[in-house]
Length: 119
Image (cartoon, rainbow, N blue to C red; front, top):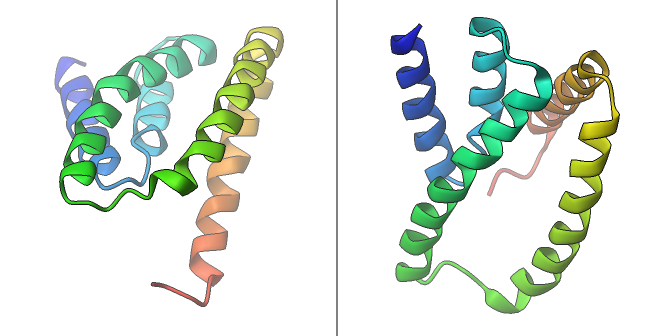
């Protein structure tokens, strides 16, 4: 079990550093290999996300690849959305929350497969 958690953390950190989102790896790994509730899994994902994103953001800022004028409105809306999502996650049943997450990952995967512009 410990090896799975270490591997999950490592792979999700690498994916997060690329800007893809480590939760797409971490959440399914924790759901399959632990007995944690979906709310606990997502809370762990958010806890892991903070230091991983700070590290990745520092590197991207150093490489001058962050456009802060575009980031500000996204950050503000993201904060509002994350508060709404956190309250919704506490209110929703874990099974429904897991299905919503699975649908989201499936939708994003299909979108990436059919997307024509791959800059």
